[in-house]
Image (cartoon, rainbow, N blue to C red; front, top):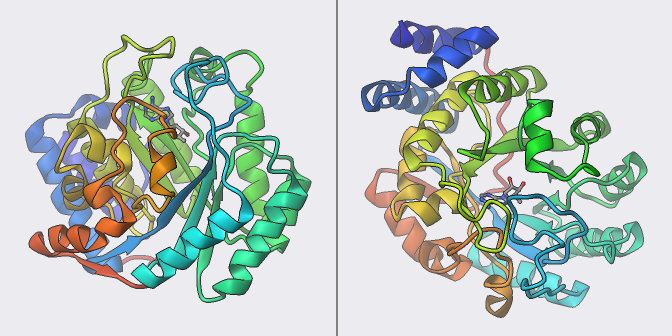
Length: 351
Ligand code: 5AD
């Protein structure tokens, strides 16, 4: 039955909510291997064996939010805070360009110092210096006018994980001043404006169930984002979820495969969190259907301070300067890291 559902998803790219729930509940190593095979088949048809890379620049560890799972939450008084200035960010992009990156991702906590004026200035100077590069922003919730201004300044893509498609689950992961409705409204605004939008969620977050995961898959099927970022929940010692169990690489890879079946053309990163809980996480992600890796381009002295969760990987293949290492590891499993903006391909219907 589960195999039959996977077979149908691989052809129709949609299922009912209840069927998604059955798929999640039907997880076994054998089923996951079957789903991965079908996922790799689709991914290869659309993207071949190309691995797209993004240079991830963590521009600020200040955050006004208090998400219960995140090490950067405002109540964490132990967190060391830093903020990069425009010159430092541009220097990261210049270094990344030399290494072969053609997409830069500016990611940060919700830091009020990055006003529209400041952020738009940074966006336009990066695009001016590197017009052949795509620029992705991941700066959390902002108002529509702000998203529009950043888009007009030259930003191409925006990552905003929806975190969970179940409002009740959302309320258990966030303090009362954060609203699921507002987050969903942000995602709609971003899409309306014309961004290539990425959403996503943690795998194994506290209170997650097969039903909430089914809602995530249904939401992604219907919203049709260009990208989906998922990674295991990893506890951070200075948060209310310090003693909650981490998500698993197995379930993360299975969900990557299901996402690939939903969206053959999706940009799906094998995330840092996956690489953190499993030394072969990046490879396993590719072999489950992912096609993107986001090595860390932040200045080395700030990397440890961007601590979303404990032991976050930022060395070796996780690091931009480890790109030859990453390329070698990808080649060892039959993939090829390419110098390319790595835009999403258009949906190919049938065939
Ligand atoms: N474990 C895994 N992922 C986390 N994130 C935040 N905290 C954690 C954690 N403890 C993810 C969230 C957020 C993104 C920036 O990082 O999904 O959207």
